[in-house]
Length: 396
Image (tube, rainbow, N blue to C red; front, side):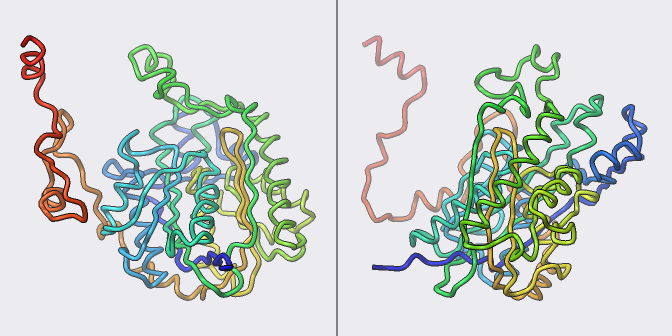
């Protein structure tokens, strides 16, 4: 019998836009103040994507940095899993755009939708692909451009969120360590505590939905925070125990960066000092699915993680979803320096030719269609004719 392979983090990277939105900036936009925001959320500033940036472009930069740290070629990636609730488009997947941007020709690519828990959910799926032998290297991304979905007259939500992306490369290994245990939960009774009312098939975008502001994020703050606090702690503990460990064995917990009070409460619930909780919510705010991978990459790069450490990543999101993974760290943190060679100008996401029609066939796709394949399929008769031709055929 073949023993399932372990999934080890071999590469990590993050990207945050240059533009900083401080609490003082928000004071000029909405009725709030720096002290109120800091004392209740711990947030001092957050990042805002530039006009030319998208979820895909930020994800691509973080991905190339993670691949550089892993020391592999982009084409060695077998699977791309991108967690986001702010895709560039409903279709195609943002993961597909990232695949092209990083120069990969082999990987399957898909988006994962679990809100702020999305990266942990994608991570667990990547682990399963590796353990089953279906993939050797999986690129797992969390990327969000939330600031374009915020109502800047609603002080309960606009103060919380920011933009950014983080990524890891998970690689197969026969060595011990890596991902040890996972816990995932979903509680749909809280489905409408955090939601975006319009834009889906239930309420497609229209002048009416725009007029009612239904394309902005809505949240029941108190109820969400109470449930998040309880669930983050219980989910993290379940993953720790499933790995055969005790909270005292964990060197660092990297929680979803939603609110400093939630993180403090989770530390108390697990009877751990705050020194074992990684915190960067003060500088990035809540970046949803990007929160955990940004924090993970920063924790490693700033010396908070060393080889042999047992760490836990844990998140909570709309749905109400939660997820945690216990990990034994095996990569040399010094390899993170390789990410510095990758800048935002080094990666480009291809845009459509125009917004009014379907693109003409790109050269790369034309080459694929012209090349011989493993199966000889007749292609002459598979394309439907124009509407006029169809109508003429029916008339005869």
